[in-house]
Amino acid sequence: MELLGLRFPAYESSGQQKPPPELPPDQPQEEPPSEEPLGIPPSGPPETTPEPPPELPYDEPVEMPEDNPPEV
Image (tube, rainbow, N blue to C red; front, side, top):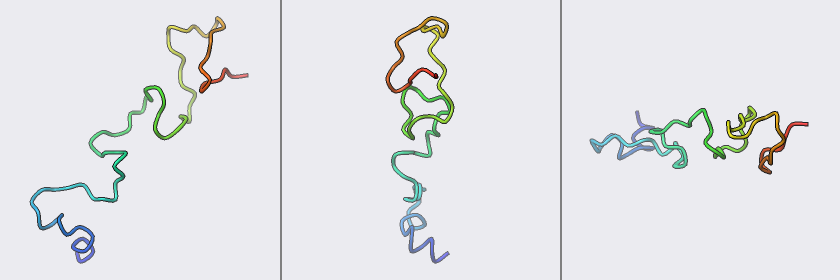
């Protein structure tokens, strides 16, 4: 337990349970990353191709955004 005392001195002394500083502030553990990216995910382009919005039918040629080029 010496490591916990040295790394998190306020973790044991104070009654408030704070999240360990190892977690980056960009990804709070309170809100897990949503599986469905809303627009542009913070981690970069998603591994799977995002589904086109229902407003733009796939059959008709539509103006695709630059970040999502049509598959050739």
